[in-house]
Structures are given as structure tokens and as C-alpha cells.
Length: 336
Image (cartoon, rainbow, N blue to C red; front, side, top):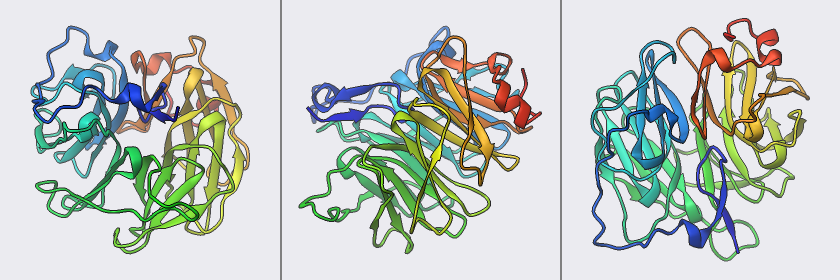
């Protein structure tokens, strides 16, 4: 049975049948409930909203931090209680989160309150990633080549038809991470070792060959023009020519990679089984380290002073617990 990634962070792989949750056109969204310890829930992604940190996860939980990740509180109003897999912001106020049932929610107040923009209860076709070029135009991607686009800040979302990959009759690959480079080109990290690229604002797409046959779960456009994609079994690839060619890198472990971030000219990644790695953007190999508790790491971001904040299957990993020798050696801004 075909297996899919249920959460971007790469927490678990479940069957497609197991992902469907009794789809019904009559299903009504239910607001997320207040939790006594929301940071103890499964958190799947984290992003910066100006100086604020915003993390999302299971049961529609959204938590906010205004002290660089030392403490978090739950958002005041979230219109759905299904899993949220990704979050992004274009400024301190405007952000979007996506998740199960193809749900898209938006905020204009830095994550305090959220409004529902889209949901499709006829099929649980989850969205795995969302990226915006500006406050108006954005894309969301997900299961079975689901590709959505908006040019009005999410007031309306339209489904774009992705062409079939070479040698296939239909477009049915899972799309895990959409990201945008400095020139405005779009990239999607997908399964079967493919990266999908658009250089015309999503009007047309091409499949790029990387030489890898597994799934890419995450991707990043670095400040020096490099592109990175990463995923299963520690596979990490870099392109320095806009995706035309790719080079396999040594991430330092076989742990599946769930998140990437650039800080101070370094690439840092987080992976399953508590692994992190770090190195120069042009390095061919990276130093890896495993956290003692082998926590399932799902995403990573830097706070306003350049320190790492990591989400996991068990919630937020406090900065004081990120005792990653190789990261601290390479970047003195990482707090122990």
C-alpha cells in the first residue's frame, strides 16, 4: 500500500487509507479547544512573524512566543481542530497555516486569531506546505499533486493542474514543501526524488531530476543562491544553478530530514531520532549530532537574535535543551 507523509516534519509514515478520516461533505469545521499545556502536543512547523514565533500542530493547536521561544501561549481563536502541518508569514501580522482536509487558515494579527479561508471535507487531501511571495500571492501543496494558488491574499484559492511527470499518465506525486528563491522562482520538494520548478509565477512547471529515487520532505533557498532539498534516510542535495543539476551531500546520519534553516552563513537541519546537522552552505559534508532523548524533530527556525528553536513530536524543545555540540561550535548564537 502506498505510504505518504502525514506531517511535513516527517514524524510518521501512514497508509493513504489510514489518512482518510471518514470524509463527508456534511462535516463542519470545529474550533480548536484550549489546552492546559499546548506546547506538549505534537508540533509540526514553526515560523517567524516579525519578532514573534508561531508554531502549529495537531488538533489545530497554534502557540505563540514573544520572548524568543522561552515561553509559549495558545492562540486566542483557531477555527479548526484538525492537524495543521505548516505555517508561514509575510510580515509581523499576516500569516497562513495549512493542514488536513485541505484546510487553509489566515491571520492578520500575528497569529492571535485566525479565519478559515478554505476546507474540503469531501476528501481528506491534506496540504503539507504553504509559501507566499508577498501579502497577496501564495501557493499551497499537498497530497496527490494538490497545488493551490491565490493572488488575493487567500480570499480565493484555485486548484492548478500540474502536468504528469515524464513517463507517467497522471500527476499523482505527493508535494511536500514549496519554497521560493530570491529571483521569485518556485520549487516544490516531492516524492520519487523529484523537484518541481516554475520560473513564471506558477503558470508552467517542469520536473527536475536529482538522481535520487526517494522522497524529499523539505527544501530551502539560501541567501547565496544555493538550493537545498532533503528527506528520507538523511538524503541531502544541493543545486547552485537554479535546480538544473544537483549534488548529493553527506548529512552525517541516515535519519530522515524534516527541516532546514539558514543562519549566519550556515545550513542547519533537523531530523528524526533527534539528529541535527550543521555546516557551511557550500560544504559537501555536515557534522551531525544526536540529542540524548532521540526526540522526533519536526521543524527549526531562528528567533530574532539568531538562536535556534526546534519543534518536535513532544512539542517545543527549549533552547536550554538544544545541547548540540556541533551547532554550538559552528554558531556561538545557539544557547545551551
